[in-house]
Amino acid sequence: MPVNWTVSHPDRLIVAVAEGTVTLQEIERYLDDVITSNTLAYRKIFDVTQTQGHPPDEDMMILGARIRAYPAFGRFGALAIVASSDRSRWMARLYTQLAEVDRPIKIFRNREAAEKWLDGQPHVDPPADP
Image (tube, one colour):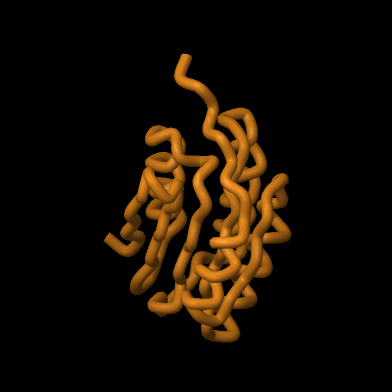
């Protein structure tokens, strides 16, 4: 699976790593899992340094619209995107513009810098179970 992710409940942290060519459907599956696991409020690292292809701009627009609808599910935790190539950094910047929601978000060239920044971001409480 091109988007693999792990969650640390004690650290309230998700680390997702995308590999190869990632499709909109794979990113949507990851997002669905984040929502259903009640971890939207967790801090996140999304690492795209090992991707070869990138979703087309149209898919990025769909993704942005989907993310803008997610505040109905609760508050977002901070997001650190790790992108090393020029193209992946451009896609990360496009994502941050299209998926504008209330949360800290920053793009990094390496995981160590992303982790350091994320460690300084506040924890957000997930919504209480009904």
